[in-house]
Amino acid sequence: MHPNSIFRRNSIDLDIAALKARAFGALVVSGDDFPIVSHIPFILEGDDTLLGHIVRNTPMAKAIQDRAKAMMIVTLGDSYISPDWYGVDDQVPTWNYVAIHVTGRVVLLPHEGLDSTLAAQSKELEARLAPKKPWHSEKMNPGVYQRMQRSIVPFRMEISDIQSTWKLNQNKEPEAIEGAAHAVKESGFGLNTDWIANEMLAAKEAKDSS
Image 1 (tube, rainbow, N blue to C red):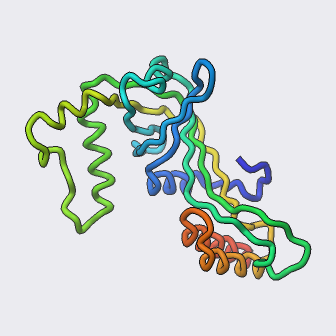
Image 2 (image 1 turned 120 degrees about the vertical axis):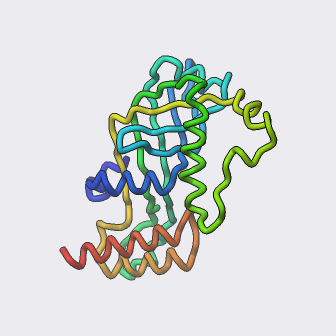
């Protein structure tokens, strides 16, 4: 997380909403010799539990067998910021980004809980594709879904803390933020740059009204 407190968003509700919207991140646990990382989809159950699944018989599955401490790192967007975009002198290049770190203990769930975990994930994610008719496991040929399930295992993370960085040039004057935001949209240099630009403009409006 960024050390400058101006970039640390205080509203946990906004972080929770962003996590639910993104639904994908990097699960990190400590291995014997080095960190183990799995890039996986997830859903939130309430505000204090994260549900997902991982591949069985992997270093990640082994590492989280005993209520391991873990972190889910979620990146929502980022963009390079050129000093020329501010319209003021004596600036340096930087990178704007929004990232959320979720920490807690990860618990492997019994295989019997896999059906409900997968059903909850697919139901929530398919709903975002409306008006498309949602996919469901009954569309698969008999036995195929069950065979595929043998290679994965469900887990839940009992969330103990959520920290976030929303670095959107809040340390600049409103006019500088606005100029950089429009340039971000035009350049497209980064991840989810339209969203980052809109968040920068929201930060600019917040400074205008403060």
